[in-house]
Image (cartoon, rainbow, N blue to C red; front, side):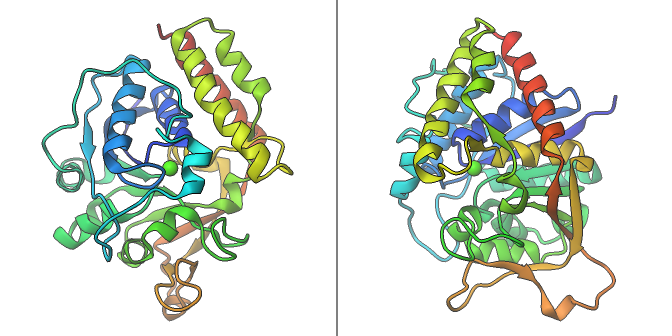
Length: 320
Ligand SMILES: [Ca+2]
């Protein structure tokens, strides 16, 4: 089987951790690197978490890169209180993992992304599950990557449902609407895995119990991390009855787009006025027959949950 080269761009994060697990548990994926961003945590914490989570899964071979520390138009970043509540102050549910003993690579994330696009081109899929800042800065530095990248599959945005930080804004896009708008208008073939579909994918304590039952450190730690997140959802969204699998669904769609129904559309992000941060169709390109992007509007949730559980349970069962 020809493996897909994949870069995960993460603000690690509980569901980012599950995205790493999904990628590591998927034989279709050659994870060539994790580029880190700010969001759920500061970028440095995101990188430490990525390294330690990879170590938990026995994947010390995957390089980790530090990305941009804040939004393009800002000069700093502070973690929002709600992020610390949902993901824990350390981003991984206050769970302490064994230190990987590794450091992030010396190469900045943006340069790694540019090099990887030139090296792998069509064979590369880039999966960001935080703000779009790293790709936006990469595009500013080298616009030619827009034509060369195979695909981007991003977790973020909301098209047919309300936002989760305001009536029209989703959290990842809201961190840096200018960056997301730059990426969306760049012509990169991108699929938006937004709240439209991610809130239909729910995980419960019954599921995480299966990881615990594997009897491995990886199974127990991953269950502890995820249970913290499920508990937060009991407060923030009690009507759901579980936690949304936002970030791992983006990895799932990157591997198998048939999990979702994709609406071809030229998207943009509002950067001005009261709707700043909204993902919406670009009116200037409404009649353009070529659609550079797609928005996921339906998901086969039972099939995705099966894939998710099989891959991740298999992964943690095979770890220490
Ligand atoms: Ca994330």
